[in-house]
Length: 467
Ligand SMILES: Cc1cc2nc3c(=O)[nH]c(=O)nc-3n(C[C@H](O)[C@H](O)[C@H](O)COP(=O)(O)OP(=O)(O)OC[C@H]3O[C@@H](n4cnc5c(N)ncnc54)[C@H](O)[C@@H]3O)c2cc1C
Image (cartoon, rainbow, N blue to C red; front, side):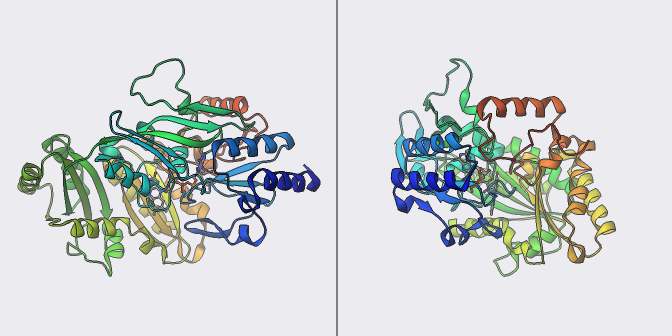
């Protein structure tokens, strides 16, 4: 593509969308690639459409000249999904932030894809309903980004991942075609469920512009506890016990290994003394505060009697509950020990302790100066690591220590963050050749020129990482 056609494209975009919708030069490089990635954005321009029709027009123009496009939501993704090159056009959904409706009868809401998650949660709550999707980046991440990454978060255990909350969506294909699948019904088996093509495919098959999200009745009681355990065996017994005894009300089971708790709680109101090997943040949502809170206390006492926990503190107010979650969400505290790498893997609960021990042993051997923190949505089989390698600064060594042992446990190199550019090399540890070839075939069918988020998730040339 020539410089001439790119400058013509910019001119056409300014004419169709208005100059304010097209950022170039310093307005592009003033933005950073990600919330924890300080590199400046590189791009031909950042385009900010306000509607599906405008975005369709943008993609039609790009398609005509073979212009690659990278999509930006809230840029909180953690796998380099938003990285673009100097010749790419970035499409940002930041001006598509309309909450179109909250439908109490059908228990759903219709939003534009640029709506921040927290605003959508609030709009649902104002209508007496609940959007259960919740994650630490709630203030900045967007519904479109959540859909594109099939985000997980804190309540997957009870409500599932984003996929379970999408009733319908609208997306624009690489050639500008609008696919409107704005279904509102719980049941609709009329042919292929096309929305699934755009959920968790990281913007490689289409750009999500609007969505219908499934809502749930608000829970009237919220019981939260921070629990100390002296071994992972206790954690492992506690989860099924709480799940069963709370009668389906258990909504979060977050486990913090000691080093994470120490670091994240420093300077905050630590509810439990340091010294235990594991700390668990537990949340139970129910319909009746008068009964549920008492039942929650009784179940925790029973767990203590059975030896499934060593200590526990129950939040007595909304403020105290928020202070518990502030510790869980304080991942940033672990990023201050030099260059840091964040990982997201999943594996069966019964293998977690052995896996973590193997990884830490390997890191001790190859990077004696490393600082490593382990935590995660353990109720979903999901672990996160933050690793600061120390003097060596070798990402490849750390990746190998984290990913290689997963294979023996049948684990996944990505529980919830996706693949982006960062994990492409490792995709073949979790997906077979046949699976990757089918992914390539879908990409070829929907975006034959490879214009949308080029190079993300897998390459089209048949090479996929480890052989
Ligand atoms: C503090 C913190 C906590 C987090 N906790 C969690 C967690 O608990 N669970 C979890 O799953 N993730 C978590 N994340 C990761 C991140 O927040 C999620 O991946 C989130 O869904 C990304 O949304 P976003 O709008 O920021 O997307 P972006 O980062 O902007 O984009 C992510 C990917 O989706 C594509 N994309 C964005 N918008 C669209 C669209 N409209 N159409 C098509 N493609 C699009 C992008 O091109 C990119 O490939 C966390 C991140 C941080 C910083």
